[in-house]
Length: 397
View (cartoon, rainbow, N blue to C red):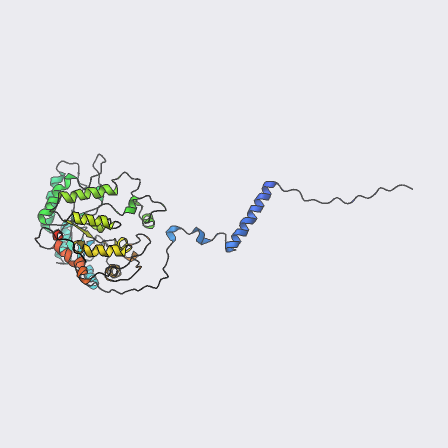
């Protein structure tokens, strides 16, 4: 009988080995899927984790008092406005009456357009508008006779009825000689113009430099990031310009050299971030005033220091807004900040976004409001013959 061979066990079917790289990728994908579902299952990405800073608009949960201010405590002279977009002056005057605005100072009087603007505003509505002249910096500043021509033109502008002179921030920041050199704020070529202003007793509204953040790097540390994102031309960091400190030094030399000329430093001299230094300037230069335009947010985030400053220098402050459009609700923001003790006020309606902080009210006494709203402006625009209203000592409160 033939011997039978023992049967072998069937060979086990084995799965082919996966390459190591493919196995690692599969494991990584599984881990990512697990982590993603752990945060928000069903979504590829948590939208809040990738929220852009430009889209962050927090709303406060605080219960806050909101004091309604329909009209200011006194009629207002707005010492810093721009009427370049106004088509119907009569409608603007009616709106001013509803808001509580006695007079508007128009800093866009212009050069060639001055005569027409004086007729359209100042003469058509006596006592409601004050048009300011400007200097023509595009008319060959390199020419040897530019200074004399500028002085004669300014003298003629005041004789026509211009109530003052406006100097844009382009002086010191943008205006250049043919050589490429920037024209400094204290350029001697302008001395004749300042003397004409003193001769006619006309104030000079001068805008020098800009907020400190505009001169700092545009990065995650810049406190005006949102604003500069919308206005990249205001980013001066890295450009071949005078520094902010140099611009202020030029302006101060100008004040010292022309003590008989009254200067109004726009936007709280663009140094509301540093009230102690601004106070030193006001103490040093009796021919210096400042307007409050477009700087409520800077003052209002330091309410205690700001209130002390406003009380002490109440004779040197002018109400201003920098408005191009005139809406009652925009003015109410200013009235509320100056007149009430309300907290955490959103000022964006007035002058747009200027940092993401909020402002606190100053609850100024009525006697101080009257000076800031109206009386100080009347001293500069009227026929008062005293050398300078500012030569008196700062009022202590």
